Amino acid sequence: MAPEILLVLAIVLGAIVLFATEVISIDLTAMAIMVTLMLTGLVSPDEGIAGFSNPATVTVLALFILSAGLQSTGAVNLLGRYMINRVGRNPNRALALIMLVVGVVSAFINNTAVVVIFLPIIFRIAKFTRSTPARFLMPLSFAAMVGGASTLIGTTTNILVSEIYADTPKGEAFSMFEFSPIGLTLLVVYFLYMYFIGNKLITDRQQDESLTEQYNLKDYLTEVIVTPGSSLAGMHIRDTFLVEDIGADILEIQRGREQGGGTAASDHAAALQQDHVRPASGSSAATSRSSEGGEEGFAKGGMQDMWLPSQKEILMEGDHIILKVNVDDIIAIQEHPGVKIASRMSLDDEDLESGESMLLEVVVAPNSKLARKSVREVDFRALYGAVPLAIRRRGTFLRSHLSDVMLRFGDDILLETRKDRLINFKRTFDFILLQEIDKPVYNRRKLSLSVAIVLGVVLVASFDLAPILVASLTGCVLMFLTECLTIREAYRNVEWKIIFLLAGLIPLGTAFHNSGAAELITDNLYGTVGAFGPTAIAAVLFGITSMLTSIMSNQATAILIAPVALGLAAQLGIDPKGFLITIMFAANTSFVTPVGYQTNTLIYGPGNYRFSDFFKVGGLLTLLVWTVVTVMVHYLYL
Image (cartoon, rainbow, N blue to C red):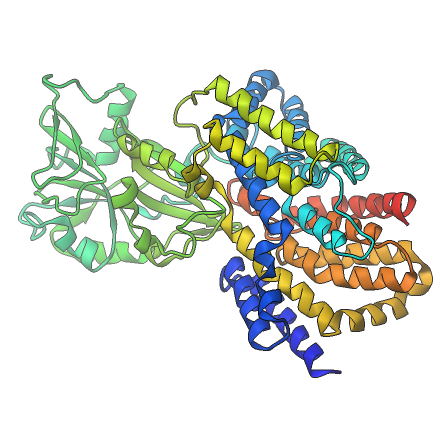
């Protein structure tokens, strides 16, 4: 075996491991691959940077901007609100409408963006239909995946495979609806399967109404009282052993209560039941500030509540403090003189919510700049006026030592936040809120313009009036000129890691071909299944692609398998289009794991799913898609 082949195969193996484990981000992995290929001489510098000017990369960038225009004007959100009004209390009608609407919309808008927009809508629908979000979130993700595979602009993988085919001697870029007959058939098959079978396979883990119970936080939230004569009295919060030695998060202080007057949590809950709200300025129940610039509290009858108090706040005798600690630290608190554990330690949502504060669930967005930063580095208290209470990641809960946890895309975070700081979450692109803060306002003129621009791009590309690259770039310019989208919004909404992923991986396909590695694998694969004909080869290609895309990026999988498909087609003397379309559908329909596709990762935490749920529901669906694609490719292309 030639040294070049061994080197390329070693790089490919390393890439698969890095993509699967995400030791470093996928875009950084791709860039490292590109640099390694150039340093080893497997590709020339021109070939190494060719991914940045590749039509697929530029087209994907333009399509991200078009999707951002529709998001910015609220076009998809308005459709989602229409769905809420139509489903009523019927969960089956809601399921059918979700799959139908999302499947169609994802054919023309980036499917990850569609899932991001529909996440809070799904939670509202679940509440209205008295269902668990899990019943709708997996169908949402799968519908977005199948719908995105139905048109040329539905996913980045479609654009990439189209350009790979266009680079072949007799090939040309796919038309807008080249493979839509297969995509629409799959959408129908998916709809019937999920409605009648798959939906019943989703484990109905009833989510308690209490978020503290969902995240199993009750053993981590503790109430302590500063006793008379305590050394803590007169100290800044930041200087106490609670913060310096234990690292506790101080969530609330209640002041002005007599020692025997009950716990802060119980009085807090009682106040909520009496519908206390922050009084107007000048009333007898006046709002006050802490002595050292702490956050605003609620004072009534000599009592003062301070939610998320400043680290500069000075403690006083008799203060009731609600804090978040590790279970082991409770013993240390009990043994420390000057504080005592309150008699009742079972705290719930009511104890953490008030006229000033609330519990909020957010998901780390796909292009969040906070991903791969620790909770300590983010400093939620300073940036967002919030304290992280727990993180749900891939079916597991992280509650201890949160400050050291490195955030990842798809993490579901439970926060306590001040209501007057919610605007910080609305302004950031780093989080997806799982509940609507207020009713969105739409500019209907801009909304109509953005829809018209996207529709124009689709029609121009469909009738071959201009290449999809030219049509999509023209659409971007029109979005900016009509002020449907600003340049700043475009920069924020583009999934740059996908752009760098494509730019970094395209040279790998070149090296795979130039080194002879693709030819070696092609010869061995042809010797094994070639005698069974092109349909059998298509089925094998689907299976290999499906397995790989379950553990690594679908774009990376397509780039790796495409040269093999081209080699097999050459040996058979047939047009490679059928094989490439097979690979495309296999890469786009990764149902069996929550980590193989972005949309699955997004709904994994919020749906409270387990890894086995995807295998159970997605396994049979994968077999159905495998069969349908193989049969239709056989009749249409082979």
